[in-house]
Image (cartoon, rainbow, N blue to C red):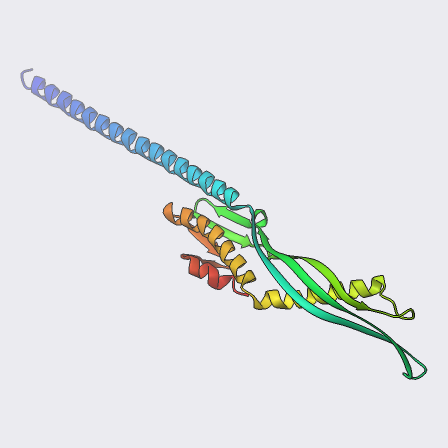
Amino acid sequence: MAQQIPEKLSLFGTIIEIRKWVMVILVALVLFFGYKYFTSKSDTSTVEYDTALIQEQIKNVGKLVVTEGHFSQVMTYKDQNKYFGDMISFDKKALVVINADVTVSFDLSKVNYDIDAPDKTVTITNIPEEEIKISPDIKYYSVDQSTFNEFTGDDYNKINKIAKANLAKKIAKSSLKSNAKNRLISELSKILIVTNSMGWKLKYDGEVVNTSNEFQQKLKP
């Protein structure tokens, strides 16, 4: 009988020890899954918060960027009506002075983009082309015409068309378009600054953009 008591005490002690380990394991599991739960929730909340901030920044950038310029030119318009095998001609001509206000604009509300929250990547899929508006003020001087060859609406339309074509060439050679492109890059760089500061990536034309200069290279004509 005396020998059975120590055996029972030993068995009881073993059971208590097992229970202790079971409790330790259970507590460890609770702590582990609790940590995973709260950490995962925090990560999700952070990504959602970052996404909202980036969307808001893109919305703020989505405005009309306008660069203005002024151009002038002087041209002489001539026209002839010939009769009887060029033996008789009736001429008309005019000195034309054109002053034009020109705007080059980018409507950034038309920028298309995708946000990949899990990969923390913003991809710009489309940047709108510039819109060029020419508003010429045309004045006519030294108008010379004949009864058989007077100025008509067709002449004025032709002069207007020639004037706009000449102005378009001047605009192409000027710094107006490049200045407008620089303003565009400046606005788009605001998105780049936000994404970089938040640890996100900005992609355009299939590649990650890290600096404003890279934007400039990609937007070259």
